[in-house]
Length: 216
Image 1 (cartoon, rainbow, N blue to C red):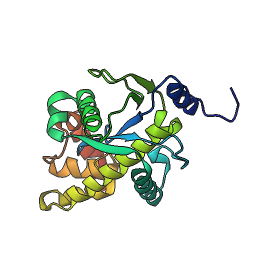
Image 2: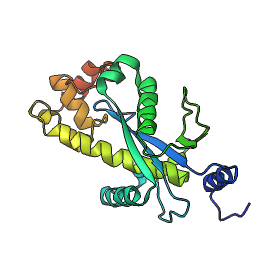
Image 3: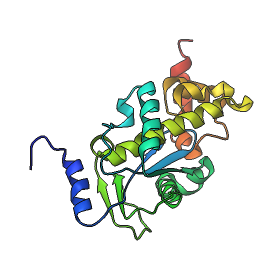
Image 4: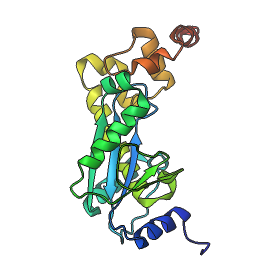
C-alpha cells in the first residue's frame, strides 16, 4: 500500500472494485446533546468527487456551511433523517440513532448498495455495510455526511431558539450541548419540552446549582 494513501479511502476503492457503485456515507449530529433532535445524514458521492472533506467538528462554521452547500450540489444524492426528543426519551439514544439512520437511507433518491457508517453497524438492514472507527475524520463519504448533519442540526437549534418559550435557554449559543451556560440555565429554571429528560436527570442539578451560583 502506498504511504500517501488514506486507509479508509483505500477501503472505499476496494468496496467499489468488489462491484458496489453507490457507496453511502452515514453520520449523525447531536447524539451527545442534552436538548434538541438527533440528526442523521446520508450521502452518496460521485467517484471523482475531489473536494477534501473533514470531520465537521474540525471546521469553522463558515467553512462547514460552504462545504455543506458544495457537497449537496455535487453529490449524487443526499438526505436527512431525524429522531425527535420524544423518541429519544421513549427509546433511548442508541435506538433513536438507528431510527434516524434508517429514515435518512429511506429518503435517498437513489438506493445505495453499500453503507459506510461512522463507528456503528446498523441493524435491520439488508444493505451490505462497514463500520469505520473515526470514519468522520478519515472517509470522504462519512465526512460529507458529518458536515451536512452538523449544519442541518445547527440550523434547527437556531430556529428553536427563536421560539418564545425557548428563548431563555439560549439554544443558539450552545446548540443543546452540556456547556456551563446551558447547565446554569437548566439548573435555574428547569428543562424545557426540547430537553432529553433521561440525559438531564443524569446530571446532579442540585450540585450544579450550588457550584454555579456560589459566587454569583
